[in-house]
Image 1 (tube, rainbow over the protein chains, first blue to last red):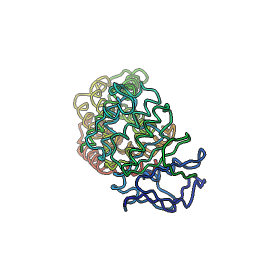
Image 2 (image 1 turned 60 degrees about the horizontal axis):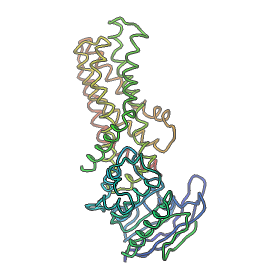
Image 3 (image 1 turned 120 degrees about the vertical axis):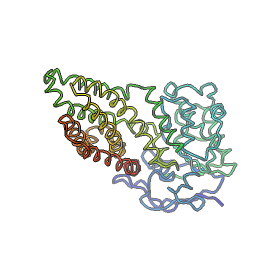
Image 4 (image 1 turned 180 degrees about the horizontal axis):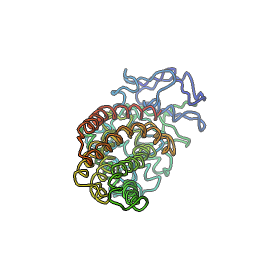
Length: 200
Length: 221
C-alpha cells in the first residue's frame, strides 16, 4: 500500500522553531489540509515534504522511498506560492518546460489542460499579459496532465475566482478518488469532501 | 541531453523577448571602451599599450554586471524551485543556463572585440590573440560566475557581494589573458598563457556546474 509517512518532523528557521515532532500518515485517496497562522510553517512543511528543504529532524517516506530520492521526486508534484511561470513565455511554452522537468507527465495534452481551467484560446498568450488569477490557472493546469501520485499545493486558491476554485477542488477530488494523495495549505474555506486537517 | 537543449532554447527565447536584459551589459562594454580614448589620450601608441587591459577589464565588469540576473529571475518566479525538485540532473540544467548566459554576453563581446580593438589601435595579430583569449576565457567567466550567482540567489541586491565573491577568482584569467595580448604585441611567445587559459576552461567546465548545483541547493534551503 503506497502511503505517505511523515515521522517526527521538526523544522527550525533561524532561531525560530516552527514545529517539532510532527507525525502523520496519509493513505491513498486522502486529502490533508494544513492550517495555521501566517508564519506558522505551512509552506516550510510543504517544502520539506517536497524534498526542496531538509528538516531539522525526522523523515518522510512514500512507497518506501525517502524524500530527496529520485523515485520520490517522480511521485510528487509540488506547486509553490509562486506560479513558476516566466512572463516572457506563452502559456504553452511554460507548460512544456515544466512538463519537461518531470517525466511523469507523458505525452501531455496542454491544450486540453488549459481548456479545463477555462483558458481556451490563451495557449499562445504571453504569461506576462495575464491577470494574477489567470496565471494561477495556467500553473494549476498541470494538475490535469500530471500523473504524480502525491500533490503538494501551497495556497492553490490564491487569486482564483469561485469558478476557478470549484474546478481545482473537483480535480483534487478526482485525483484522490483514483488513489492519489493531496496535501494543501489554504486560508480559504474549502468544499472538498473528506478533508483531513492538521493545524500548526 | 534533451533537458539541456530545452533549457538553453527557453533561456535564449526569453532573453530575445526582453532584450534589455542582455543588451545593457553590452552597451556598458561598448560605451566604457569608447570613453577611454577621450579620457586618456587619442595617441595611438598610448592606447595600443593599454588596450588589452582596457578590453579585458571591461569584459569582466560587463560579465559581472550580467551575472546577477543569471538565476534571480527564475528564483523570483518560482521556476528554480521546480528545477531543483525535478529529477532531471540539476548540473546539466545549470550548465544550459550558463551556456545561454555566455551566448548572450561572452559571444557578442567576442564579435565586437575586433572593432573595439581597432578603435584602440591594436594591430591585426594582437586582435587575433585578443579574440583567442576571449574565446578561451569568456566561458570561464560565465562558469565561475554561475557558482557565485547560485550562492547569492536568495539574497536581495546581492550585486556587491557577488562581485566580492567572484572577482578574486577572475584575477588569474585577467593576468593570463592580458599578458597574452601584451606579449603578442612585443612578438614574444604566448603558448604558456594560452595553455593556462585552456586548462582553466577545462577545469571550470568540469567542476563549475556541479559546484553551482550544490550551492543552489544550499541557497534554496
